[in-house]
Amino acid sequence: MIRVEARNGEPLEKTLRRFKKRCEKEGLTKDIKKCLYYDKPSERRRRELRKLEKRLAQEKLDAAAGISQTSAQ
Image 1 (cartoon, one colour):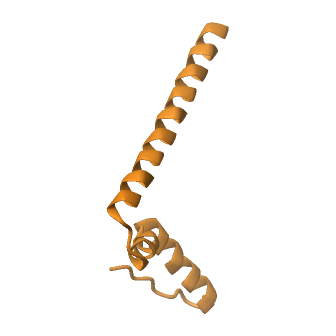
Image 2 (tube, one colour):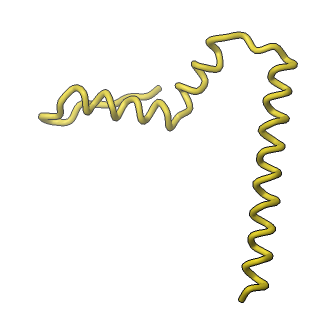
Image 3 (spheres, helix red, strand yellow):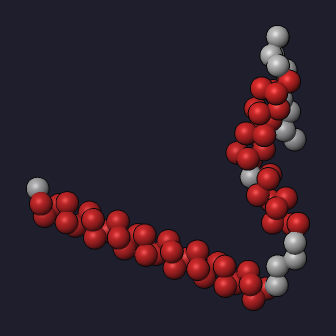
């Protein structure tokens, strides 16, 4: 459970902002948005595949950049 106590003399807006940041950090807002609409299993698999492909492509680019940096030294 996320709990934020208002500090002495702190405006409500600032307290609310700290609460929102903690919710985002815990992944609560992402979970709520995910549960708002039903995802078909095929859509979920497709999204996870795209995410995996994107991550692998990024790792490949990072590896290539690491090789070129090593050979340049």
